Amino acid sequence: MTEYGKPNIGHLLGRNQLLLGDYVNRLRADADYVDVAREFEESAGISIEENTAMLFGLHARSGRNLVETIKTDPGALPFSIKTFGQTPISAEKRSKFIATISATPAAMKRDILRRDYGPNDFTIFRKFPAVEQWYNAHLKSFWIGHLLMDNHMLIEKQLAGPYWLAFNRHGQSFTRFWGKVFETYVDDLLANSCAGTAARFIPDLRDPNNPNRQICDGLVVHGEQIAIIETKASIFTADAKYSGNFTLLAEEIDSKLVRDGDTGQKRAAIQLADAVLALLTDPSILPGLGIDHTRISKIYPLAVTLDGIGGTIGISPYLDLAFQEALTLDPKYKEIVGPLGCVDIEGLEFMTEHFQAESLPRLMQRWQEFNPPLFVPFVATQLDGIARRVNPWLKRAVDNQFKSAVRILFPDRDPDNALREVAEQIEAMHRPRY
Image (tube, rainbow, N blue to C red; front, side, top):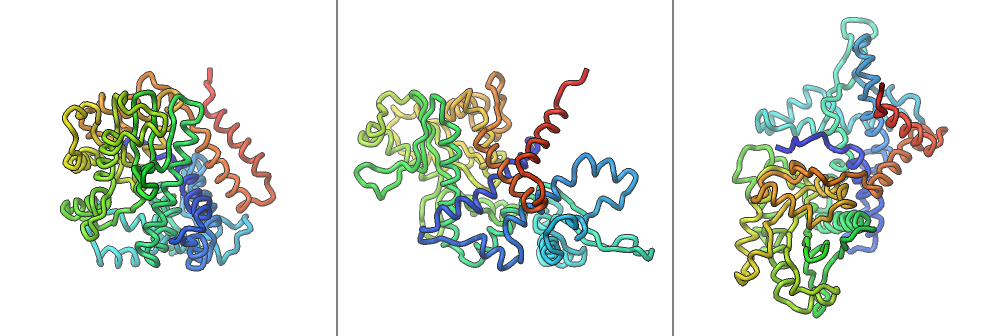
């Protein structure tokens, strides 16, 4: 349901490292602060930076050279503790890293027998994206190797391992903290992506008469159009996603994106309805931002999730049902408000790659014109005529992640020179041949 093209591995690596490092550290003074990096290192025996560098290395290893090598040497396909033998990372740390991503078939079988949701449940490979087994067992030179099942699931471990460790230890306090971390990341993404364009990003919009009341997580304003944004960092459970029990999935979507069934707390869909009502009926909010609320021609509500469920087929119209029910507007405003759209963070990052040519509200308009109920994800929308360019802010994050991996894996190499060499190789690969 999410296969609209290969994921942007660079964005995934850069984003996760920013969330786990820069943005967690930025919020050290928060009441719910959790030192995610320290707790992960204490538990796993390796630092988050070392973990990411080795994940990056394994991902890069599964490229063109390996594909060519295994034609003549199939034994090169599995990786082992020797794979990182030319790096300064100790054998002990390499073993601990492998233990976090690989398990034997017997151990995997025990996990599956404890909870088997059938052929659509790949949770076991999200937990262990590599399988450990003996090779050449009939010969004297037999050895332990690890066969990687899925590159994307491997990279997802970068965030999943530290996240679930912190969540299992701290519960709801970590959920609150992680929501602030994710919101800060989205704020920076939108602020940097809107810079130099006709659109303006306004983070953390507050009621001018009651600063403790947040109207929404952010606004993107372009002319007479506005996109209202709510961000949600909650990660959905495997039970809800893969059990095949649609009632369980609906309950978790409602609890995390509509209204919490236990506390009654409003979530994205109802929060966006409240924000729309406030902007259209309270004359003190938009004028304080230099916006004439009487001239607003369109408002597009947008929920952004960290979990990939926000980018699946049907999630937008499902949330729109709750949004419309909560939107008690005067009929004269009905044409102004578009349907609720929902994207995951990868979808929003994809959107920002078009910001130099078109703003977020205009992209939302294009999405609605292409598919009025927004049943298909934004990434499936035809964007003919809208130029797509590399997001320089995201590229810097990815480049910094690459250089961090070089410092850890090859400390004798100059990270900037290594980055230039890779850029030249990529450019040569895409250069037209005559």
